[in-house]
Image 1 (cartoon, helix red, strand yellow):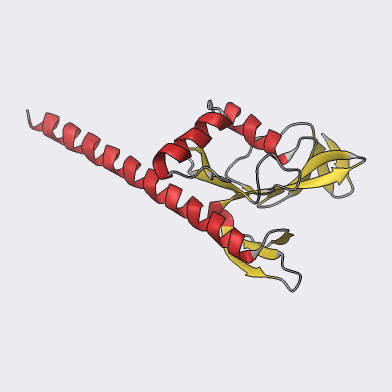
Image 2 (image 1 turned 180 degrees about the vertical axis):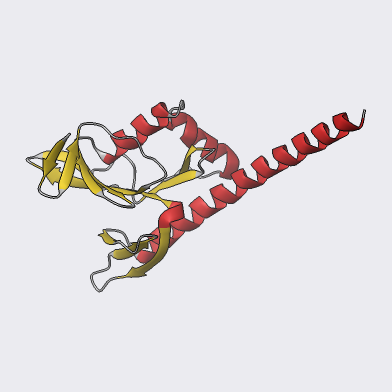
Length: 176
């Protein structure tokens, strides 16, 4: 771990519940990421998409599997949101095609407000009141946010249904 000014510089990173966004940044002709966390920001020497794929693997899944899951649940194939990890309910969405250099990834649960700037970009305010500006129209951002909320609703309902079934089963067994 190397400190650059006020920012820590890391070789690798796993997205976690404190992550707000993973945004591309060019440093010395290398595409890296600036990771915004709830209480600190850092530079990571990986592209945003590499961080997402690495984080999926860290939690025992593949990005492709998460993407296919989203497609099966809601039919989304273009810039699909994904659930990174179920127990912590980390839902992510890309701002453009994940393979593009300008694609940022945001965690749905930390976004509290967004609005259009005068230049056609979108200002995003997170749960810690940090604001970043992203090169995405407010309409496209809203669509991505809505798709992620839909994915979250579908998965949360399925989890709730499974828990109800389990509780019913366990409740019935206690009677005998």
